[in-house]
Amino acid sequence: MNLVKPLIALLAIVNPLGIIPFFILFTESFTPEQRKRTIIVSSISAFVVIAVSTLIGADLLHFFGISIASFQVGGGMLLLISAISMLNARTGATKSTSDEVEEAADRASVAVVPLTIPLLTGPATISTVIIYASNSHFWWQHAVLIGYGIIIAAAAALCFIAAEPIAQFLGKTGINVMTRLMGLILSALAVEMMSDGLLKLFPGLGR
Image 1 (cartoon, rainbow, N blue to C red):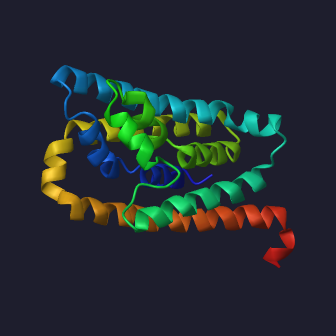
Image 2: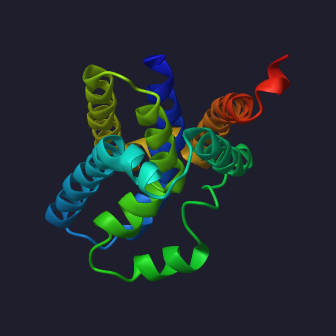
């Protein structure tokens, strides 16, 4: 397993810079202490989702009788949908709906839902982690994936801590540009993931 690809894929999918406007919206009426607690809970929750997906994701596939090749094709399609939305500078359709965003804005606590799930670690993130974990054959490769969960959680926390300065510096245009760049990277990874799965399902395609 290429150890760099999972980190690149996760950073592109999670895209904490693109979540900054949602974080500001959800926490605009929060006290500094409430905002700090929200950042801590959301970042820890993101790590837990990635770690759990790494440890038991492959077992879940086996339990439901789903082959890793089929999951790669399905997961790749899910990533491609997210990538297309990001190329249009939108939060992926697989992450959150407008109704969920409006409902969340009225909640006292938004750290876990929808900030962590589905905005930070939605279906695309979970399926990506499961696919890379399923292709890992040694315990240290799983440990690396869990370590990437720490990196993702730290990146999200840093972006949320500096949300307002970042939003002022980049502006909406800057955040949209970054989102499109992440979408471009993600689309390439999605195509590669689907092609790898299709070659496993239909070996004749590689001839």
